Image (cartoon, rainbow, N blue to C red):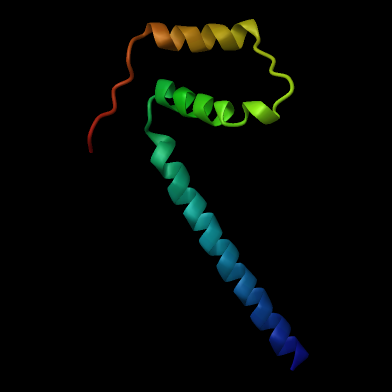
Length: 81
């Protein structure tokens, strides 16, 4: 009986973790085709929401150049599907 119970518990855990993995795949798929500028903006929003808990932020010249270079290209365009 204990072996059957352990097998059922293991199957329940596999089902739950499988559902979580599928949900994460779908969540990531939303962002897959977005332009880098949009992704950067979303990341900046996430960062801004956590600034009160962040003590230090290192902004390197190469990161800053990448960010500013992306902004110089103009507004990001999202195509309708």
